[in-house]
Length: 279
Image (cartoon, rainbow, N blue to C red; front, side):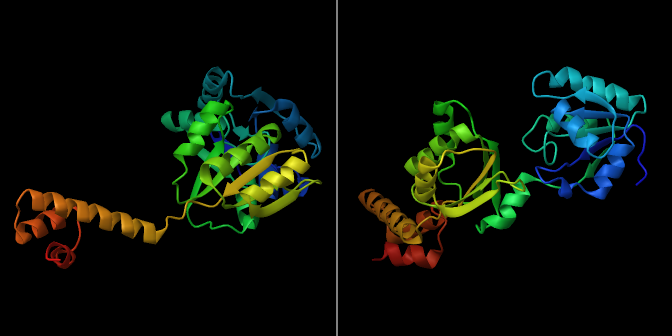
């Protein structure tokens, strides 16, 4: 693959198994002038395994503003630069997103070199609904913020995907049981690595599992979305409509007027409003 000067290449690298490095990614990295890395030493070791080298630039969460400006300047001077995450696909729940946005703002070309992602790897084997997803990345570290954040997602009907650190995984699972109740869930540990483990169960069963076995490694946590009870929704709507009708009767409104108001403000069919108003 021929690369072009002044272009940022967003290159996915393995998340564990080196066999997942794509030939295209290796070809592109071999042509780069600079590599903007989240973890310079890890990237240096990774590329050394393929006898590749380049000039390395640190692009971490702290200091990303200054580092981003330096990368943009290099690109404007015609350099070829690749953005590389510590593992997997850059700019997904890591500081790379800011560099990509900065390049877009400056009108610089950005080219994806796709490959492995812990997100898609976990989704492919979790067995939970995957048509509609809410990817939330890493949860807040502070307990109060994490509680508030998860409480705000309780009624989210899409399948929810999180990244979580091993020392917080059990506390997060316990909090999910408390706030969300029992749901199906998946935990992927050390995906593609030697100690890979995948579990699809219920939240409470996962709590019991990790109480007995100390969490170690990197985790992807997937939880099925909220499923509203259609019967309870129908009953709530009926109670609300009955309350509306009782109020309109106290106001002395005629049945025809009640029908018009119900149909307009509650957005229900007129025949349904008539049936209720004339009961």
